[in-house]
Amino acid sequence: MKFIQSDHWQPKGIDELEPNAWQALSRRESTSVIAGPGAGKTEFLAQKAAYLLETGLCPPNQKILAISFKTDAAKNLADRVKERCPEELSNRFVSMTFDAFTKNLVDRFRMALPERHRPSKRYEISFPTFRQEKSLISSFRNNFGNAVGIYNIRQRLQNMNQFIGSVRIGDSGLLWLEEEFLDFWLSQQINYADGISRVSFLALNRLAECIVRTNDHVHRSIRASYPIVFVDEFQDTTFAQYDFLSSVFKSSEVEVTVVGDYKQRIMAWAGAKGDAFHQFEADFSAQRHSLLLNHRSSPELVRIQHVIARAIDHEVREVQTSNNNLISGDAAWICCSYNVNQEAAHLAHWIANDMQGRSLNPRNYSILVRQKPEDYEQQLSHYLAQHGLSLRNESVKIGQATLQDLLAEELTILFSTLLKLGLGHRNAQAWNQLSADVRLLRNTTKEDEKALRQVERQLALFISELKDLMRQSFRPDNSRLVFERIIAFIDLNDLRKTFSRYATGDLLEINLAALEEFFTNCVDTQNSWTGLLDEFEGTNHIPLMTIHKSKGLEFDTTIFMGIDDNAWWSYRPGDSEGLSTFFVALSRAKQRAIFSYCQQRGQRTKIADFYALLSAAGVQEYVIPPSVVV
Image (cartoon, rainbow, N blue to C red):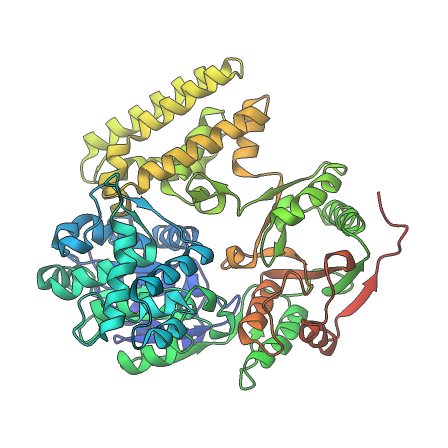
């Protein structure tokens, strides 16, 4: 392939990059990029990938590794690179989550670990609760009685993720008690009577770091394979993830580009570092660049966002927007209700009217809450149904996955596309993408024209057979057959060979079980293939999710419920993470943000900061009359 000269390269799929983005894109050393909401972090990384691949600056025998925090973010970035680069180049862009990367290393090189730290070949992923962590700490204390230093280690264990992420397996510099606790913590996950380990992602991170640090062959192999590394949403990097990143890539020739926004740091509870950008810039000799355009929100929303941003960082620079106000009236307001039924009735009525008046669809709206979406689901679903609308809790657990993560999996996307084409939907874009995906699955190159024609014939034949099957009556036994035929056509072995994250371990089995459960749920609640597909894709559903799950997403209108002391029980005035969470919720909106306060849910004394900031930004408060209830 003929490469483009770097000074002749132009952005793909967009008109232009802002000057700071050009500087960060062309820099050939480690770089940190501060990019606020709507600045186009994902687009910037996709453009930088295209630049490095199309100019040959990433050598043909090597790859770019992109690390994200969420499965859907990793998939979105990979898709954008596919859209901007020829297939032979985009195949050299590997996008996965931190958890998938470290799990893959443990699955491949498990035998390189010391025997006492080695999980069973087949192991389960565990998700320890705060209560379980406290119980484990108590057990450790009981085992060691009143050992010297037990009090100090208990203080450090107040944040388990921070403590574990700061210590390394087999590190000679550890204090005796630290080493004892680390061994105790690992043994509780590795040693089970039935021989099957139950390992958390935090433990997998520590095990992967140990493998890389103590096995020079693995270490050199990773750095040789990936001379260029991207890390998205860097403000949420945990102590363990940063330590792993440093262990693998620090003091090497690898170029690391991190992108994020410290104003959106909302994962401190999960062990996120508070100084990740500054430490990275010092450790990797990285240069900082800031993107100063907002491509998402209207000018009025950007103005309100800046008021909140200034409360988080007094020195924050004001950003400009490339968008226009597309609505008349307020871009943001607070609506106050007395009880949950009145709140839900009012919001459902308003959404239905606005959707009809502006010719929007349900997925142009989102309902965001701080935690426990199920607490808001029942009333809201009831009143939305009276207007012919549906709500979907996208944070709900399906098997060992959340619905939102499951829908972003390669397996699920392939399944959904085949289902859509089997139903007879004529969609050239879906067909072209599916053809490319199947060619990739079957390991077919563009040069092998005979193999390409064979893959196309097989795909066309399968879609024809699927259509015939789906023309039959919609029954549970028939739908089961459709599911099995589609999975067989995809071929799980081909999936493992194609996607490294599925190559080892049981991630593919976990996702397949969740997909089957979700598909069955859709079958049980529908009476036609069209209804099933709509239910599966959430086409006519308004998404309900936590603020944390909304990161990276955008909606025309965001409705933020539960702004009260009970939902924000841990908030303290001036708490920067709480303000950042509030900022993230506001910044998901493109045209309008609505803040809903319900007196029945709780008071608003603790979080008076939020309302004061909204007032300072000129956001008006409206009280819903008591008579407004259905």
